[in-house]
Image (cartoon, rainbow, N blue to C red; front, side):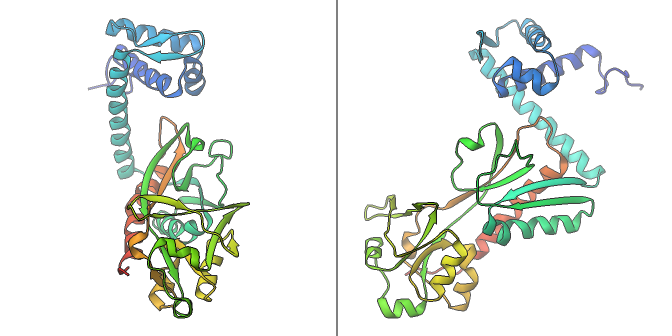
Length: 324
């Protein structure tokens, strides 16, 4: 059977118009206005408006409440959007599966990540991915500042902790989470004793992480079992986690550090954990990328690989942590 040259999906042009109308509808909702959708899709605002009018006529319902500045969804519009969004996501996932089977992963992928977490956890996974795909070019950037993904043309950003307003307009996927441990050297514990509760930390030398002039509060469980911020005064503060780990190994005080950073020190006995029952909240790790309608194969594969490998890597780092 011969396909219509004007219809790449093999159906009549009317059906293709309907699919295009759905795509325009989903992008209009996602971006919040006809004007933004038009710019993103390379159409005129008039073309977007006409596409929405045809869609509403075909469905015999209003999808938007229109005003001069913003378009908001009606109840019917919200229901229709949920179905359309899921359907397009399924189509994109199916396309990616076919691409994965037919094409070599190729092209440049620009990735931004926190310095130490990137060095210890993310970069090894991505380098192994590059080893498997010789046509994949990686541009890895290590920085603890919150990069602007769009203006700096970043394809993939790895973020630790809760997502803030800087993630608006981006797609996000939680990759994993990890715990932080309270630790000190055996020499420090022998000289000063080990705290038996978080409140006793105020009687110890604390090695604090500092960002600018701000000391990061320790988030630990209180006597009622709730996780609270515990601001702890200290004589020594650092803006580098690895330096804090080195100071703890040297017996200078008690530190609260990611388990993946001190795993080797714990295994060698250079550090010992204390207050294991009071770890507090786990820290989340997210992948962020520009919210485009098509997700390149190299980006999808990188996100999927990190989602597969990072939880296993971090779980292995937490194995063997005992109770104190």
